[in-house]
Length: 438
Image (cartoon, rainbow, N blue to C red; front, side, top):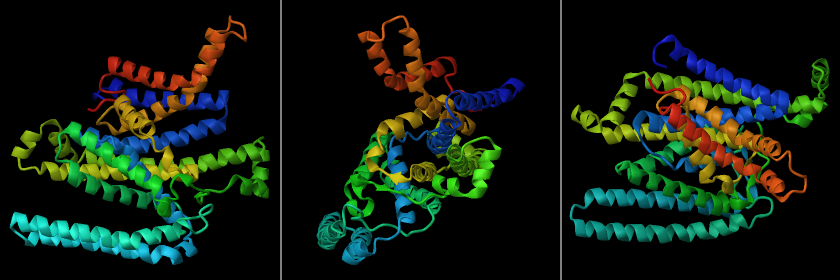
């Protein structure tokens, strides 16, 4: 990406190599697996773009990615799950009153802070408002939660959602993540980069902990499964006459072809979202706003001297990047068909996504997309590749040899070693990423 012919050809060749690797998986293993990897690569690329907006544009070190992705996942429940009528009747009113009481407490505290000038009386009044509001809110909240969670807890035990198409959750997931980012940004964006990282990590862990424990909202660790799909079900396709005829013409069984068709349908939806986010990101990066953000990233002192509102711009870009991560989180829940709060681990949603951005090329949107594809591909394929490598290295040993058995059993651990090896090679031979920033 240096302006010459070779620089412009390099990204194209890398993407072609990536798609060739996916095609090789289809030919050697199965096309269903190749398409499953492709779908997760598309979601990973969207999430990588969100982090690149924060880090590549503005230099904001956010390690709370999994919290915003989890909020996107919650949107899948709030939008697609039908409302649990019995739960609403048991405690929905109490939850609504508790929410109204908490909002009133916040507004009263803000009003008092602005109207009372003297520090001593202001602190006293604020303490009284907050303590009174807390106990009043809990007086309505706790009985309502107990009543809701007691409604057939094995099946429901939560309020449910709106019963709308799950595609709406992609928009709502972005909105929820953006709202949380505004609150986090107001608290943490004035901190130094290392303190910002600690703060975002801590807040994201709080978000995940709430989702794990508030059964009335998400069923907690009991999970919500069977979310409505935006694409057909395999069983329905296999029973359709037109689909059976189509599969026969292609020389495939209806069972095999239905799996491929569903994954292609998911991939088409994810690809549209990725292309839209990529196009908007490119427009933003090349606009005066994008040049301003890079100027702030490179030298905050000079940008502030020219009258730029550093904290305000940082808040802007933090919200935008988190919204994109929230959209990706909702897409992931849609693909899985279930919401499992316990699966939001830092290794999956923080370390891997950051490796994607670094390997692809921080500050370059195309690099972030490529990094999402490369890292997720090797994250999935590292285990079978490791198994093949260990089998090759120990081919001369007996089947019952303890060393051979140990190495074959340890092939799954090749994932972490592969991630580290890729990161080291890229940082050594292409320190600014596979497709570096111009």
